[in-house]
Length: 105
Image 1 (cartoon, helix red, strand yellow):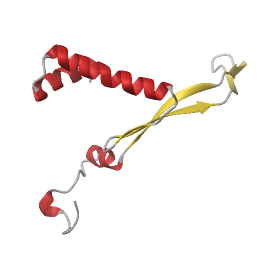
Image 2: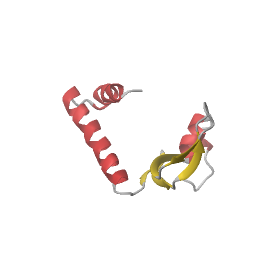
Image 3: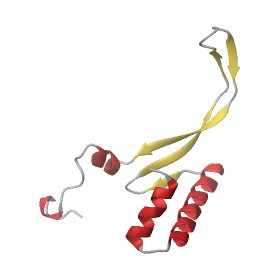
Image 4: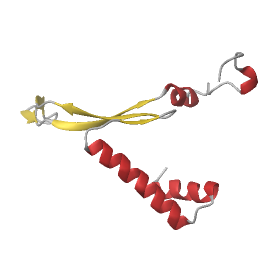
């Protein structure tokens, strides 16, 4: 799914104009990018966590030549899906209200 497709889905489901939907999507992505750039975790309940991790410099090899090279330290973005998302992806989903044990939400 592309950003344009997300805008289209918001336009169809929420009823915003396409321009408003595009601005909303852009602002949400900007907030997420800025938060991650500051080194903070982004936790979206029911979806997952985006975390910036630091990888130290290390030795590596060029697979074509076998020559040893130095890989510089860098930051990498990781995503850990929530249990809810994992269940949806594995078609388990959340039980319907009638199937939930009494007293649970």
